[in-house]
Image 1: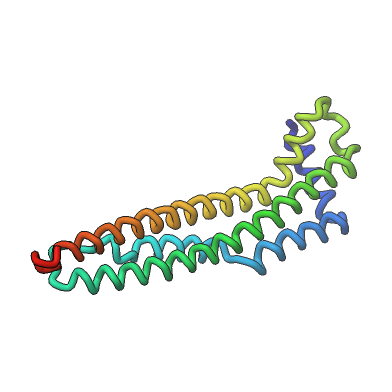
Image 2: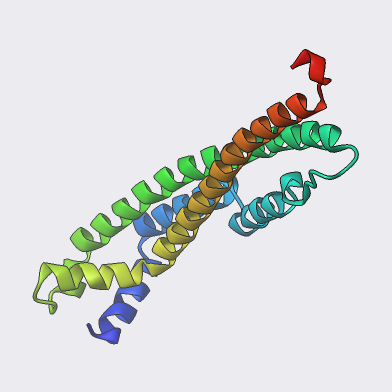
Length: 178
């Protein structure tokens, strides 16, 4: 793959009104719906500040802390689900836009790609030209996976919190009530 082909193609695309419109649509879909770095920071922060990470069963107010922790877990899960929904929507919009951009470049810029013999090589050149879009989409997909992992961890912890509450209920009952 020649760098001059990629450079020439990028130069041509910058002056292509239709491509510029699609580029703006991609950027608008990305920027108007989410700030990836901010959401990533929020997901990491929510996970790091979860109360279940510091619960101590020997604490004198463990019952109160379990209840508080359970409530916070549900609030965190709700926020993470909200983030996930937005990410899924944006991912689909961006994926569709990227596919359109790729098809457009392959069909409208055949003359720029004429010296490349195979279809696979032409697609590789187009992929290289559109790398910034694919990179953003990849980062978004990583955030989706991380968010899903945190949600799954909250679900597992909620189950364990329920077990702990049942155990505490049994241990705090007077013997005659058992």
